[in-house]
Length: 257
Image (cartoon, rainbow, N blue to C red):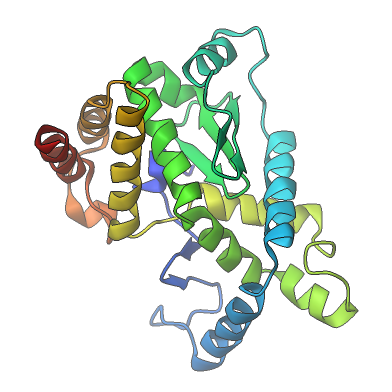
């Protein structure tokens, strides 16, 4: 069974922001030249989607994930806690933020580029309020810095929806079926962000919390918890910084402020 870990630091992923892993890889695990060209062409084409189309794609992807998962009831302890922690977090720049809790034991959270932030009950069970605020602010960072948008662009470019839209002449977003939206949602949930992007989202989170006059030391303790839960073996984290290394970096950054 696949075990999702917050920020996908341990999860297997279909997509990365530097490239795309496909079932068309050869025996050596490398993508063929023709496949790379096809995907490269799709990425260029999907990058031309208008802001309105990307917003609609994000909305449809979030709505589809909400249908596929059990959302915490409004009066549940999870929903009430999340609402309390994000009471003043309704809009940042042009992004309307929307927070929901999925009733899943995984220690995970993810963001959709339209501003939808989803956090799992398993993460909330293990993290304090300050740590949870850091997680949420980190996910907001992925939205505001364009990381989630890029992940969704790659997911869409690599999907059957891209070919369906091109062959039918319909709008790229209108042609997407529910099953394809599900695949895109999984790509966002399991998106492996680069070390640079994770560090950028970490920096965004602690700065955002400081501006809100909220404690940002939860960044350090949250990452230390992940280190304790899942270890700090760099080989297990691919190209991404291990949680212990991120915790040390955050601790130094907070002290320097």
